[in-house]
Length: 187
Image 1 (cartoon, one colour):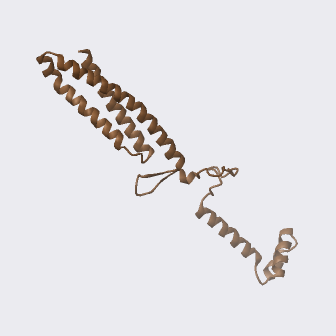
Image 2 (tube, one colour; image 1 turned 90 degrees about the horizontal axis):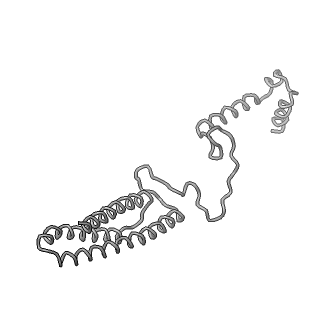
C-alpha cells in the first residue's frame, strides 16, 4: 500500500514514466481513470447539488435564524393530491387575515341587516300592491343574508387557495346582496 501511495505522489509530480507504470503490479492510471469516470457518472445521475444554482455556480450557504421553517416545509404538494401543507407562519398569517376579513364582513352584514329591517318596517306600512311587489324580494334577501352568515361561521381555513376562493366568492355574494338591498331602498 505504501508503494502505491508513493507511486501516486510521484505520478503527480511527473517523476514516474509510462514504462514504469506499465511494470507496476497495480496500474495506477487505470485506477485513477476509473475513479474519474465513476465520479462523472455519479454526478450525471445525481444532477446538480442543492447548493448550486442552475448555472452550476456555488451559492453561499444561507443561515436561517432558529425557528424559521425550511424551504421544503413551506408548502409541500403530494404528487397524488392537491392538498397543501402549511407552516405555522403561513397558517397564522392566513388565520389573522380571515379574522380581519370576518370582522369587516360582519360590519357590512350588520349594516345590511339594519337596512333589511328598515325595509321590512317600511313594507309593513306600505300599500298592498307595494307589499306584493317587494315581499318575495325581501324574503329572498333575508334568506341570502342568513346563508352568508352561516357560511362565514362554518368556514374553516385549510389552505391559502381554499381561503382565497372563499374570500372571492363571499365578497361577490355580499356585494350582490348590498346592491339588491340598495336597489330596493331607492324604489
